[in-house]
Image (cartoon, rainbow, N blue to C red; front, side, top):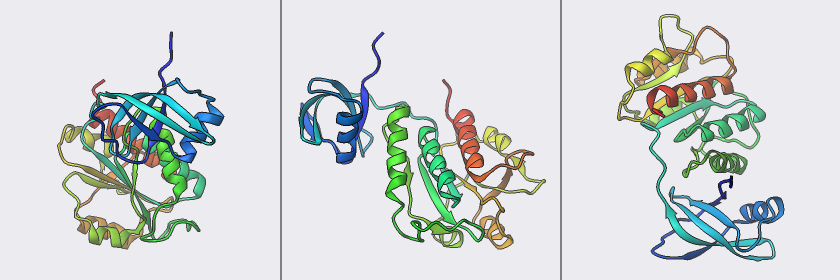
Length: 253
């Protein structure tokens, strides 16, 4: 039984009416040449920044750069239900890296890193600056592995209050809270399964949201939800929420 071709990411947007040759980035070329040891003529798949996917053949290897001849378009992936977006308070580097990787695997559309009052400070993450390149590499690698054609969109970090003040989220938005009177996330999702509007789910730091942040979420139209009776780490809570969304709100397979 033959395995599926290896997948590679092309950072540009392909406009293809017929065969076209694209040059992979140094990182992608290195993986093709050094790690997988593919040769000219090897069958590969390529997906681009716009979510298009193509089957192709390695055309040439020039030093450390690989070029791929795109042969035919691959049908777009099935929509995984309504878009799901996660806003999450910054945590330690290892947990944040895991979170980015798994949210990309789970088909989450966007992640909004939030600097909350109780967030962990990360040296390479500043408000309103570009996210670390490391996160983009993790998101792309996870997209390649999971078969999605559109990597996780990682938005510039913002403080909670700045983001809520700028963002006017649509309906069906919630924030994870400890309020015992709040509805369970699973029930909230079941009640709204198939809703056409994007969802934002905000996950707080391990110390929880501060009172002023909870008030800001409520004023912005976010409803409080509970994630169950266990105390979860931030990365676990975000992954669990993303998984629940995809199982209840979109995946019928």
